[in-house]
Length: 481
Picture (cartoon, rainbow, N blue to C red):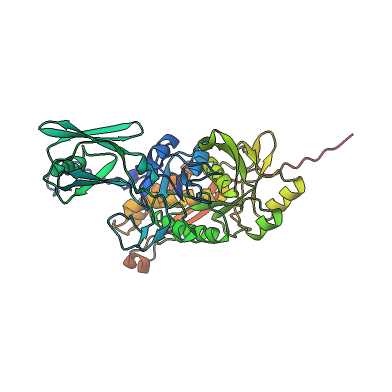
């Protein structure tokens, strides 16, 4: 404010009252699994199933996989998730890992090396190798890539082909080929290049030749999946899946992951969706049920079409049913219950009886039933307490995200009554919106600080939330007169 000398009206504009919570969602999916191609151990953000296939390739036939007993999981699970409403996905490709000590043709992954290998081709010259080309990422997909070199005097033309992609480079020698392929914005989508032992010689003329050496290593175990989950730790993902993976070990890893990520230290509140093993009986399902307000356990498995095997119907475990359920969660606002909602699958692995469904629901299982389609019996977590309804967990997480978003701009401002009132106003605006959207019935809010808390830089926000609950039962009393 200017020095007050001449009489008049002086205005100071303070922006605190304009601070509102940013865009909030608790619907992004985080998933790890094995794939035909794509970066290993890195997070890729996807917006559609078409983008997933473009990045990670198609999956292999479930009953006759590329790697015996280890069918590809990532894209198959994403197909189910997107078919049921998924939008934004954070995906991590995992592989089997070992310490090979060979960084040249291995992929560094989480302190180890991936057993997957990049396909490669040594571009021969008159006296040796002009350039060494390697596929952008590992897998047998690279073995489908071809190279040919034709004369274009005084240069040569190098042509790379993969599927519908064709790249051509007219160069004088191996060094120029390397520079063009590795160019930051105009370089190859398919390969990267390293120098051969004769970089100043021209590539020799050759007919179309396939790359070799690509290996998938789809035999990722629970430890490898856990390493993949670690890559999602700080991402804005809220619904977590281990694609195609079932069993006590992966359930424990998923539970540990979501509970660690949801602490005040990491602040990535999330839930895990997992499922029963293929062929599991009701007692077996109940015996393997985790116990957590941040875990959803789905049973039974499902039947779906295998596009890698002429659309033949295949039976998949509850881990794939979990992907369909995760998509259904992702498609709905936090307060919309999954109870009685349909999922898009061909059929269920097992048609449970009403008595068995009652056992499963009582045992905290999100059970699927065949009734005018394929429906979720009751939208529940594996918690036996206050967060047994999925909506309660998601509403509270939504509120936590919103309160953090509304509060963050105040970090570093004065800890006095005026600023605390502005902070309260920002949070109040967000929570009032939750009431308008019917996520909350009501709430109570107070923002305070004692003198000691002011000195320590603490503004205390005290919230009482009253979430909206879904109708799970309709009790009818009839009087006959």
